Length: 277
Ligand code: ZN
Image (cartoon, rainbow, N blue to C red; front, side, top):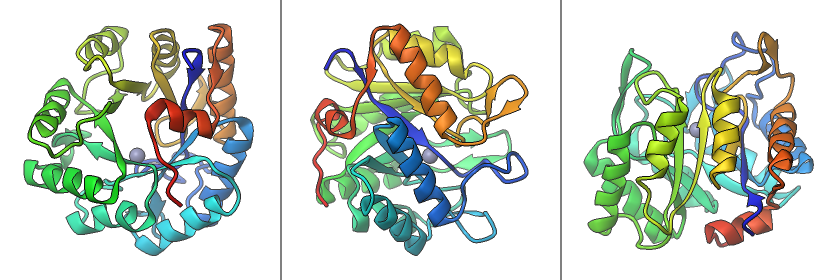
């Protein structure tokens, strides 16, 4: 398993709009079709967001249910549901999709930040305690998203206090979000060296550093995430017309390192996940 790299595809996210790129999947069927195409291309995990019909970021339970049912009816890709979904959303609404749909993973954004120099991405301490507790109750593993170094220590605090289960933690470094740590190799290496010894981890860069961050992450034994949530250009000035193009790009990079993308079943083994549905 040492030469297996878990590849997450994040097809949609909360920020990318049809104005940014006409190719971002937005409706539940579009998202599910895109995830299935990425699964066929070899992606291990699908990180899911949904939108309202007008494209607004949302934690709409029925949209989540529709996407998840469509994906599950077609393939066994590992599911990772967002617990954020957008800015200023109701806390209980943020917990509901993973509570009811029981994916293998859900995100835990381990701190509040100034979001895109515009507003606050609120992940206050009480909410994180509630989120971590709920995840334990329903046995969904957190993917701990780290936008800045203090968030890593927030996560270790939650672990110490029992709000995150004491097992091998899984971290995702999100580099290059305005308000968070910039996407540099130095930041990536710095963060990686702070992780608990038994942790698994992945990283991605938003914007033009995405490929160097992907290469360095794979070279350091981390896992990868690609997709239009994080990047819309497959190369300078050229929009990706499908998320599959990013999956293919990750496969090429990993192959040059003598590694392979993990199947969903291998990803479950690597990350210690249980298929529950
Ligand atoms: Zn997300």
